[in-house]
Length: 271
Length: 286
Image (cartoon, rainbow over all chains, first blue to last red; front, side, top):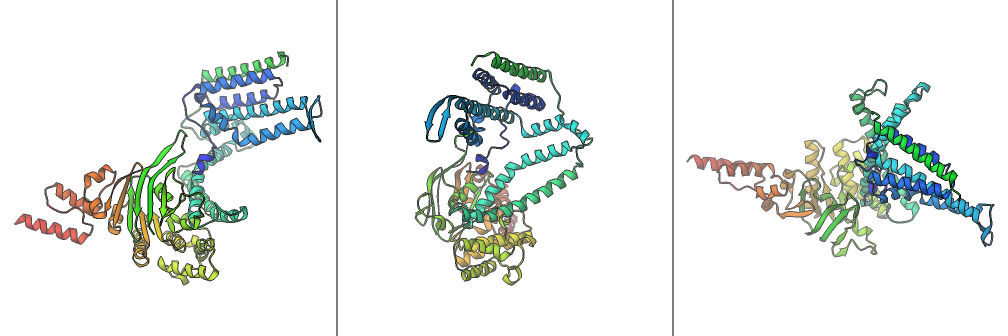
């Protein structure tokens, strides 16, 4: 199995749904707004409403649900950890279970449930954003969105460009790692056998060639960019300029309305 | 060493949307001491096949036997058996990492757990096998060598494992004509002097025709044609069906045959081809 099959960073899935076509800035702002709102939701009905909205949006995007759930895999441990800590160390409410010094109270259990549910929803929202927006679009959008920071002498464009390049080279370097690992295993490197120390020592034989090639690539890329007169963001025009459409406005308003509805639901609901 | 591949199938990313069947039920043998060419279009499954042959990849189904030992057996301690099949990857110089040439070549033998003296001996021998003078190269940094020398050092690093089978993947890619000739000569000598089985993957049909005894042509993960070099390179039409062109000389001869000349097609020696063409031309005038 190739490394790039395991690591799914920049997990964009191309598509042509409304969500795909939205301006990356709209998507980014809407996702941010929704995640902030999420912190104000405190009741079961509020969460359920939020989940319903999210599922509706996912369905509209045409992304298979299992891809969305795959985004949860890396933080499964964190969610579990949060749940256990909250469940065990809460001091309020009635005791429902006691086993030695371990005490589980009903309040704590509620809190544990809410916290881990909130964390899950947070990750789902951001995963959805990266699933429907190509990394290049996303960094471009961030570039534009934060370009006002230029006033404070923050090199927004350069940071965005670095992010773009880093994202672009992740699959390339993964493939390269794959090849070098295989080449060294062919020379008997103890990368796939023996204890952890033996394995780690073998990794020197992988890391050095990888660094050498990363530097060489960086050098080549810098030359190629300079050969095309790249000199930073100032005065640079774009082939695909970002234009906000009416749909972006509707989407933004829609996200806002749904978020507020979730809040209203939350305050009005009893449990 | 005899390699048998039985019904090899390999699927990349099974069950994913980008699932790809790289090899589809491929069975073939490589006999001890053979020199075989493995050719095919890009994506025909050559690289996957060679990685299966030394156990870097595990087949989705099928078996690989090295002198009867099953490489796909998960329980057997086969990592040493695997190293009998030395694989020289494309651009092998990208795997160089040590401070000196000698250190880099010693990496493989040390992993085999050999004694200090044995390692030193193997470093010397492998440098000689690739035609680099040990006294001149031993202490140099691999990163200061020329492209061709780097590649020879990388190959020496594989030879130091003393494999019984040597698989080379596009070993002359990106080298100048002299570097190409050097490397091919060295491989030919290895095959002749050490009786190492050589499997050569290449896109350069002239290279293949001038060296190998037998050719295996892959297309779309299946064997499209295989046989003696002369047989395989005698039929332009069926080769084209496999996405492969004839080597230069057979291609010229084949064009003449189409124009009505009566000549054999699978000749790989320039002089012989010239002689036959001259003779035919002469006969035609009379």
